Amino acid sequence: MSAGAVVAGRLADVVGDAARVGVHAALRASMAPHTRAFAASLTDISTVQAAQEAALARVRQSLAGTLVARRHPGVDRLHRLADLAHAAPLSTWDDIAPDVDAMAGGADGVRTNERVVRFERSGGSSGAQKLVPMTASSLTDMQRGIAPWLSGMYGARPALRSTSAYWSISPIGSKARPTTGGIPVGAADDSDYLPGPARALMRQVLVAVPALADFDDVEDCRYATLRLLVARPDLGLLSVWSPTFLSLLLDALDVHADRLLFDLERGGCAVPSGRADDVVARLPLRAAPARARALREHLRADGRLSPTFVWPRLSLVSLWTHGESARFVGDVERRLPGIALEPKGLLATEGIVSVPWPGARDPVLAVTSHVYEFLRDDGRVAPGWALDVGEDVEVVLSTTAGLLRYRLGDRVRVTGHVGAAPTLRFLGRAGVVSDLVGEKLGGPFVADVLARVASAAPFVMLAPVRAGTGRPHYRLYVDGVDDAAARALAYAVERALAEGHPYRYARALGQLGPVEAAPVAGASAQYEGWRTRRGQRAGDIKVPALCVDDDVHAALWPRAITDHAAQPLAAE
Image (cartoon, rainbow, N blue to C red; front, side, top):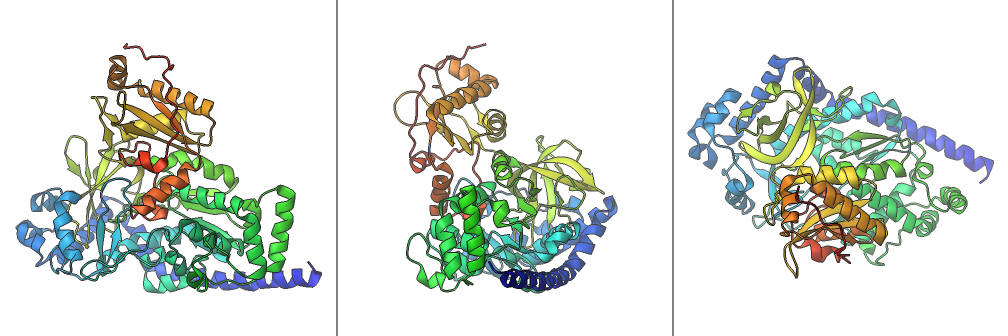
């Protein structure tokens, strides 16, 4: 590379940095009203209560005159949070599904008096796909929490303000037809959750573009995403949802290194399928021969494209780190040494529950967004400010999109407080239990077992095997280890499961067979492909510790090793 090219490149970086600093300043200014309101609401119990009562007033207004209000006359008298318990019972998806079906068909005034602007598909890891309604008010309510999160992140990390960002736009498998009532399903990208001015500003610093959502093939989309990313030495932030999504992206960086650099040098994008020319034509591609040469020299010397070399200004990765995702964070840490990881809050499809906040170890309840109740194990319901540190509770949401006292199905642990608002750590889905012969294995217990004995494996998941020959048993899907190591892991999991008396008793009686080892090469990609074929967005996919969906066995094409020689467990 000539000295003139180096100087020109550095000058371009300076000019680009200055422009990005200006964009980020305008971005933070556009989010300031929501951020100030959120910060003020955290002060003490009275401010948290006031924020929640303001959210309750918005919910009451959205319900006025609806079918739900006619079913529950107490809705019109919702003035305090204590009134909720008398206005309507707790509800689940099964309770509201017929109403949502009617809304998807175009019916008005069912659960909200506002027009439904779009539906979003639930990212749930099991069960039937859900279409969650979104209204203008509900999107604004989500922005009340997203704006403080982003403003706090950029405020606490000045280095990010001169860099570009990659936000996973959940493109793979996200395309969907409108509902029968002609209502759109899905957003073009995750920045659609931002206020209008902030959305336009954010898109000026985002690497990903909406056109990525139009790829039909998983690998094509992943390759095109990397093609855009390798062109950006100014990348400072990676914001994804699941850590496995990022691991698969970095896997593809290793597999396609040569092709990516060839495309970068000439300004093309030769996706693996050889198709999708119409989508490729809409990508912002340009040739960068000098950068391609520098990366190729590194590839020759190192044998791979090290992410920290490709993106020298990368300083933060935002991703899920709690619940099921905790087992996969270590792989990201190994691949991105020295890069800070920020735990994402609980942002469910149905609503925003918690957001990261400067100085807080765990995300804080998004008190200005929706109405929150928390269901204790004894059946009592409490507001957020009444929760004690150490409590494990289930989230109950009421939103301006028509969810009224809706059991979200997510369990959280209270880990502290910011002012009077609780900080929450996501534990997992409530009610995920496998019970073949009375052993009653719960999702959180299995997640703890796998975290203790199998955390080094890049992919590990337990699933019950009900059908076939022999006794019912559990199968341990694992990737990244040889057969002997897979057997050892299965036996270690077996011993740990036996710490729960019902499982140990069932094994001692011979009702259950031993845990079966199933080493599967490329398990993460196979699992992702299976979930996306069933309509889930790739960026939303969590690999559960315990998968109770029988179809998973066919999806992963196991080569199971039945270890009949495993030492039998004692009945004691």
